[in-house]
Amino acid sequence: MKVWTVANQKGGVGKTTSVAALGGILASRGSRVLLLDCDPHASLTSYFGYDSERLNYSLFDWFSQLPKSEKQARNTIIKLENENLSLMPASLSLATLDKKFSSREGMGLVVTKVLSLIKDDYDYVLIDCPPILGILMINALAACQFLLVPVQTEYLAIKGLERMMETLNMVIKAQHHTIDYKIVPTMFDRRTKASITALRNMRDEFGGHLWDRVIPVDTKFRDASRLHYTPSTLYPDTHGVKAYQKLADTLLAMSSQSKVA
Image 1 (cartoon, rainbow, N blue to C red):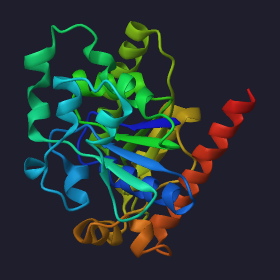
Image 2 (cartoon, one colour):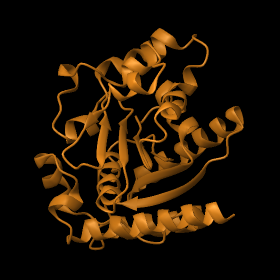
Image 3 (tube, rainbow, N blue to C red):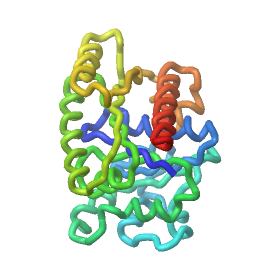
Image 4 (cartoon, helix red, strand yellow):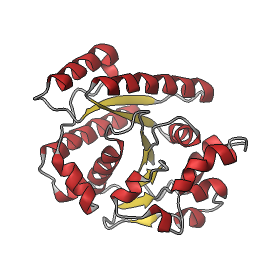
């Protein structure tokens, strides 16, 4: 089982869209995929049409009472319409984790421990992160083998990227856990000088960690979200989905290379 975390400390950069798009693409290729919503705002949960406050279980249950068996862990997971796609939903109660459980030992490894129980159920786990550093982001970084950092191609988003890199380095030092990562330029609009300048600045500053392509602005992403389907399910030929297809190809190739190494 491979765990990919999608994180950035700035909101509105395409994290949830990236998780939904990549998850749908991996599922369409035959992989069993779990989408894990780690954000109290529950955007990924809402994406698929679920009201987080009306569900019987959410990720909060993993933290309040750690599942002890595969059955307990599986009972909290929602099977989506795509037979290869499942969702671990979030809820607003996740916002209380740091206040309630920050002093409890082992809280940074809850997600890692539960995923180990169901590691044979999935080929990939994609984690959607909150935009703030806390128990949830620490869990997501501790659990992952690879980090994706979506960054909107604008000046303020690049400043947020710098904060994310500081957080990543801090977590790596604290946990002695090396994390490979790729920065993904999102919402790129080739018609605007702001996008072009931001992309050029990212290439200059982040070099080898920057994906060599971009995710373009695509209104079909919004339409897919409104209809509660992954973008590749409804609009497989749109330019945005094709960009995510290329990103998936890159990530799978990197994964294969790491296995060989």
